[in-house]
Image (cartoon, rainbow, N blue to C red; front, side, top):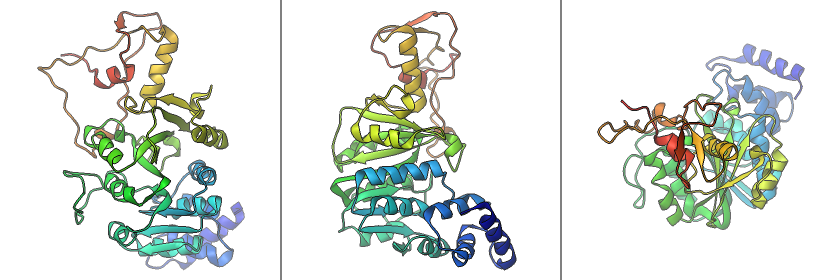
Length: 361
């Protein structure tokens, strides 16, 4: 869709709006009357929306499409549609026989139908999942809202305690993933290190979901740029190593996906690093550990780190879902240019030191 057409759609929307602000559903309605829409056209329209709730960067959508094409699913599910462009992109790229999206808002549901003729279902996504519980999907694209909680009817096997909607959705779709299927889960990075969320990892494994890859998303590409977020690929197969990559504007998406599927590290860390899933706490701690390893050797790492807080002064744990809990735990200590004063014992993880180290009293 060219710039002139986009401007024409915007001017038409301004003239025709009545009860609604110029949002994504209105822009889709106007655009669909001008010419047939593709998911790429819809992605451009979403960037014009003032709220930006539906906007997803083209680089992220291209990654979803490239991954869907590589995995070749015959059925795809989006259990909580925030942006219809994600499921539409995966469906077109994979040529799946069936694609189903669960949409909570009626106007967004109507807009989704004009973007792609898929099985869009309107209603409470958690309730709609019950109707699909007997089905199995080769690919699940889970992108529930970040940090959201609201009363939901509990299922007998739901995890106890306060659980984010995102984790609850992932929990409930786990039995619906086919034997050789996968889940692409978009989540804030506290999924890797916040205790209330990290404790669910063994429970997800019991339900047959094992992390295979993590793609860190550059905040410049994220819809909520103040929150560090990643794409986590779960599969049914447990693996010793976790593939980690980075999605930025300059990233070669085809190369990143090829390395991910092959489980292959690359000379460029953005295109693939292999690490342990148990020790992984985020992109920045991982890269910091690798950089220090290259600078000072893998056995002994010399640098300056703040003193640990003594047991008599325990650190406060931020409330789950708070802004503080979603921050990157990477240590922000300054590293002297000269090889420095403190030597860490062999085998210690720099990432774990940086996460727990705070200035002493």
